[in-house]
Image (cartoon, rainbow, N blue to C red; front, side, top):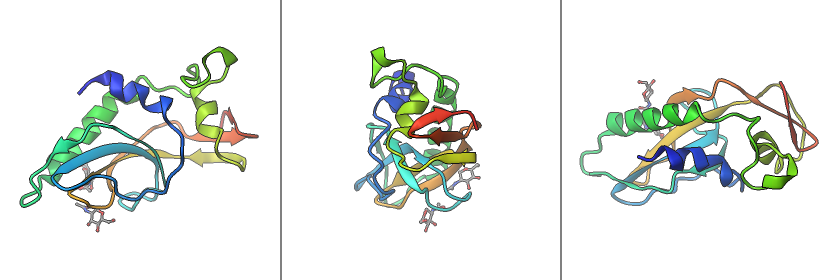
Length: 147
Ligand SMILES: *[C@@H]1O[C@H](CO)[C@@H](O)[C@H](O)[C@H]1NC(C)=O
Ligand SMILES: *[C@@H]1O[C@H](CO)[C@@H](O)[C@H](O)[C@H]1NC(C)=O
C-alpha cells in the first residue's frame, strides 16, 4: 500500500462531507476523519483512501481491516505536519494546516480538533481504529494557528 497515497491525503483534504459510509459490498476502506469520542462514529470526513480492499462479507475479518488501516495510517502519520506547504495552493505560503482550516468558518481554540483513523467494511458505518494524530488542529480566521 503506497505511502504516496497516504501522504497525498491532505491534498484532497477538503470537502467536509458528513461521515456516512462509503464502502460498498465486498470491500473495506480506510480514511481520516475529525474524530468523535473513542469507539464512536467520527464527526466529519476529511479524506478516504481511494483504494477499496477486498472483503469477504460472509465472514468479515474485522481485526485484519482494523489492524491494516491502523498500520497504513500510522506510517503515513510521520509524514504529516500541519506546517508543511499546502498541496492545493503551492505558491502561496499556505500550509497543510491552512488547507484544513480553510473550510471551517469558526475559530477553533485549544484543545483543538482531533483527527482519527477509521475503517468501514461491507457497508458498515465507520469504525474507530483508535489511532489519533497526536497534534490537534486549531484555526483562526480559516488559517492554522498553534493550539
Ligand atoms: C462499527 O460501527 C457501528 C456503528 O457505529 C457499530 O454498530 C459496530 O458495532 C461497529 N463495529 C465494530 C466491530 O466495532
Ligand atoms: C481496533 O483495534 C484497536 C486496537 O487493537 C481497538 O482498540 C479497537 O477497539 C478496534 N476497533 C474496532 C472497531 O474493532
